[in-house]
Length: 426
Image (cartoon, rainbow, N blue to C red):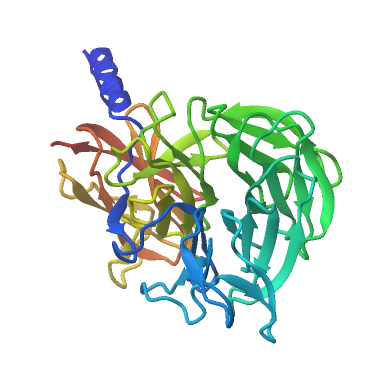
């Protein structure tokens, strides 16, 4: 009987797709008036949201001459108002001298290791670095024939080295490396396969994640040190059609998108959190509505605390961005009582639908994680991952989107691991 229950539960979980429902979709952001083919989203250290379209839909009116349509950047404050220097249609110096016009179709946005914005331009194959505090230009690099194709969105490691790939890979094309001042450093690797829009790099600069959507997989490149060339050593996410990606600063999960061209358990217009260590999907959120097969996800980034995600799609008829807010991750200190041992109480209510509260106590300051797993041991959500002082705390778990059944919640510290079961009944 127990084996039969496990089989049925496994089928239910798979048929539901990889859905974790720990994010609240707050809909079009900042409002429904911003429409357009998003091809890059970046969030700077102040929490400002930068977004640009592939299409030329932002007008620049020079002092003399006709209006020029650009693939300019809109910059929003966290409250949804536009920043003082938005929109950015030309890259200029502090003296006001126009260095270039952003009229070459945006291919992607990124944030460098100092928080400045990287803007990749497709048709003229350029990359700009823009001061995130002022909106003024810092540097520009013309790719010429270095890539062998038009450029993808950029990726940056902790030392500030910038990586840009070729949209159409193979042959003599290359993923190239640029210094923080945008000088050409050399090739990371030659001949990356298939057609892609995005790539990511690990903080130490030793692992590249190449994600061509036509290959429907992620290629993992590694190298022994920062002076050697990358080589393919692994692959993951077989069946996923990836066109946008970003690291979540809160937990270092690599988030990637899937669209209608993907297969397997992956859903259309859904972004998934990929744990690069365990090679597992651990979280997700979905664009709403996710029914238009012409929509392609080509923009994603997170607020500095990792609790807000901004995602965008490549169409001219849908909102430029939607906002997603992490739920079920906040915790509350219950009082001044210091327990004399580690405790994990039964969740309340139990059974529950769809929310429940998990309470635990720690007798000393330590690092604490609280996670939820399905009955097969697959991680469903990380509710807490932080350093806490001694005390009693509670954390909420929202199971919207999950199927009915038994789940396991876990308190883990460097000294103890305690688990209990809870029952979701819908």
